[in-house]
Every structure is written in C-alpha cells, then in structure tokens.
Length: 136
View 1 (cartoon, rainbow, N blue to C red):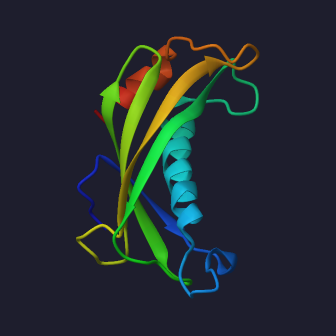
View 2 (cartoon, rainbow, N blue to C red):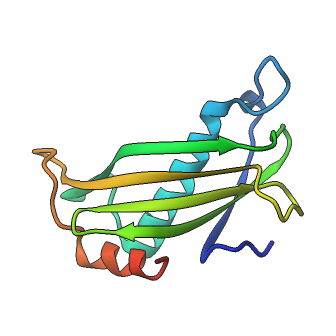
C-alpha cells in the first residue's frame, strides 16, 4: 500500500486490542506510533534499545482520531520527520486502514535523545540523525 509518507510499516491488530465497544482502543494508537518510530530507528538508524548509550524518550505526543480499527485488521502506519533539532525530533504519523486513502488517525510524537544512564539530553548520534534526515 502506497502512503504519502517516506516510510511505511504494516502493523497487524491483535485480538486483545479490541475493547468492550468493539474497536481498537485509543491507547493502542499510541502503541502503533511507538512501533513505527522505533522500528525505523532500529532498522534504519542503528538504535540499540538494549545496550546503546543513547535512547529516545517521548516528551510529547498527540493523536487525532477519525475512524476506528477493529481486529482482525492491518494498520498501515506512515512516518515522516517534521522537525529535526540537535537533541530531538518531531515525527508526524498517519494510520491508515487497508485500501483507505484517508487516515483513520494522524498524530505527532516528540523524541528527546538522552544518555541512557543520566537521562540528560544529548546530541542525536550521527547514524540516527542520517536516518531521520531521510524522512525530513
């Protein structure tokens, strides 16, 4: 599926994502955001989530819901970088249903890159920065 974002990832919903109202619960949309962002950082930027000296922490996020997802359905997540600073990145994400040209949800997510031990902001490592620049 072609999305209007430079990076896309298919994310299947799971049985337990549905809530008592019969649709994927709103908190799972943030998990989809986390999944597409961190998959990209790991596979394209070399982020080592287990042992790396630098990690990304969410400082701020937002989601606008337009249409529900239900199980079983595949969410198509699109990702781009709207703002890239020395120590942080602001992503924009679109979540699309199968075959839909209109997003079911859109949002943004700010990562601040920090030292794993001190949790103090640090410059984005060169490999990660290069990967993020490709999405800007």
